[in-house]
Image (cartoon, rainbow, N blue to C red; front, side):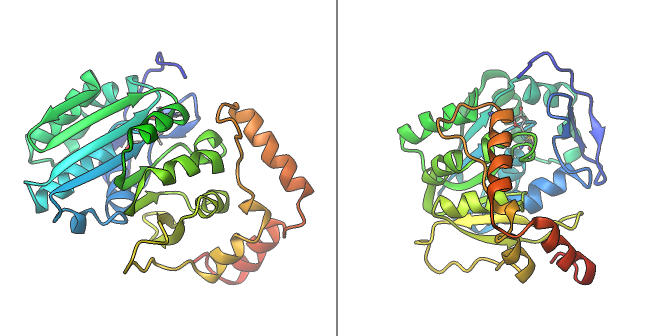
Length: 299
Ligand SMILES: C[S@@+](CC[C@H](N)C(=O)[O-])C[C@H]1O[C@@H](n2cnc3c(N)ncnc32)[C@H](O)[C@@H]1O
């Protein structure tokens, strides 16, 4: 991963800005709205407004990037309970990304009344560590496949996990069964994991890691996201998958990415899955697509 890439702010439909990654060939957020995505795909599904009543909330922000998900989480929690102590562990490969978000003053468009939050984001970007009144944050730099192992060894248990890598075809390393198994072990028994992805392969990896999954409402574009919890989480009913989504999980698209030693390149992981799909007797995903998209909407 190159730290030399220059990041130029790109506007999104809600007025907030994002970056484009030349390396991954993708925007860091949905063009429908970067801020909206943080709120509706991550903060709302992990129920931080409800969790804010607790004295302490622990958050694992996988792929910290510009820091939007962390910022939206802090903003939401403290708007409800300013005394809530927030502990954040963030995983990120490229330290230039959070720095560029600060340099370009991207949080100026956030309507963020609490200037302490901006100060927190600056200190995370510059020092990768922060301990202040009611907040502690650690930005663990490096490949998340490695840093997650260090985190797991430390015993960290998250109340909320934000899983926000680039898309599976661009960054399959962070959507594999092996990675998800480590991530799920960092989720507390009552915690909630949210991701913007509704890919069948991602959902299979979450299910294989022993989590239960539900669908989160679509924002801007038609696709929903995914929420996951431990089956032991009592009194929790997740928004169910639609019939179309359940059938999607029976097609070749549901064949998950594998990375047995957690060190394969993206190309190797993609090729391994392609070969498995070619050998598979599951229904081709094109049949499912025709069935659902000709006569029904996706959801
Ligand atoms: C879609 S962006 C995340 C956006 C971010 N959550 C935000 O709110 O701004 C994906 C991020 O993953 C990082 N990344 C890519 N590969 C990684 C890896 N193997 N380990 C850790 N971070 C990685 C990229 O540098 C990028 O910042």
